[in-house]
Structures are given as structure tokens and as C-alpha cells.
Length: 146
Image 1 (spheres, rainbow, N blue to C red):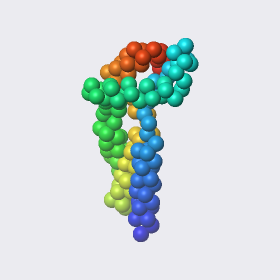
Image 2: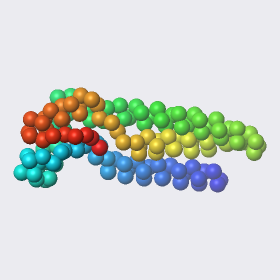
Image 3: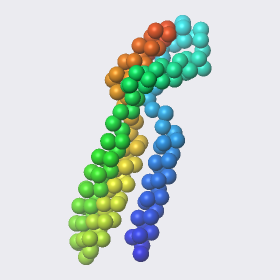
Image 4: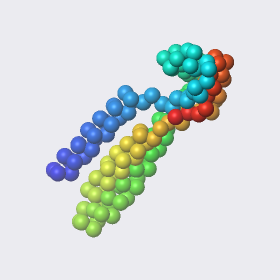
């Protein structure tokens, strides 16, 4: 009974973390050098230009966070597999390998999922180049991405 409660709590925590990650996930953005053009237009207009250039890149087929779903699924599966193996060993020592494997798999999967969600996604090279070019054409100097 205690194991079911722990598993339910882990699932709730994972769900809450997923929701916060989706709501707060802005992704990497270009960092602009504060040149003369930047100062003349101001930060607000510069931010609007960044958004416009990111949308333009997406229009041309360059996605900003390509492959994130696959990486998340892979990390979750690896966590479940390793957690299940470790849990089975621990459960065998304690007297219930099956129960240990289930608890270990659930814990490992959750850890893998959470780990992958908090890794910052890397934009594709094409997306970065398109956004950089668009911003350069508008008079900005991109010095990096964060």
C-alpha cells in the first residue's frame, strides 16, 4: 500500500514539473551586442524583432527545438530500464524482486523525464543561422545564444 502512495506522489510531481516546464519554456534566444542600432531602437523593439525573426525562421521550416520529444522519450526509457534493474536487485535483497523492479522503474523513468525536461533545448543550426541573418539584416549584431 505504501508503494502505491509513493508511486502516485511521484506521478503527481512529474505532472506538475511537466506543466511548469511547458508554461515557462521560452527556449534559447539570441543575445544582441548593444551597438548603435540597438540603442536607437531600444530593448522593447529589439525583443519584438527577435520574435519576428524567430517566426520567420520557423516559416522557412527551421524549427527551434528539433528532436526534443525524442530525447525526452529516450531519457525516460533509459531511466526506467536502469531504475528497474537497480530496483530488482534491491528488491531481491529485501525479498521481493518484482516489487523492487516496479518501484525502481517508476522512479528511474520519472528521474529521466525530469532530467530531460530541465535540459535547455538546443536550436537547430539552420534555425540559428536564419535568425542571425534576419537580425543582421535589421542592423543588430548577434554575439551568442542563451
